[in-house]
Length: 75
Image (tube, rainbow, N blue to C red; front, side):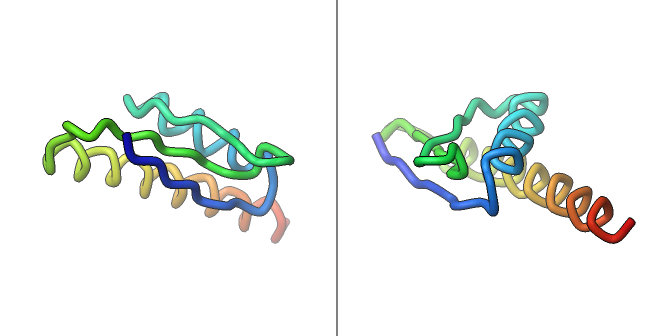
């Protein structure tokens, strides 16, 4: 399979992104010494349509969690 990791500011952020993605049908997990990495494991047989869908879900999860984080820090 293919693996890619996306480093986040901290483990809480990574966990929130994984939870948001899971709620929308994408199973991913955290990794790293502080669980701060969002880890995506893709099978080699994944279709382009499946990759596009997964990236859309992941992008939306990052956007939602990071926007909430900015809002929380601003208040």
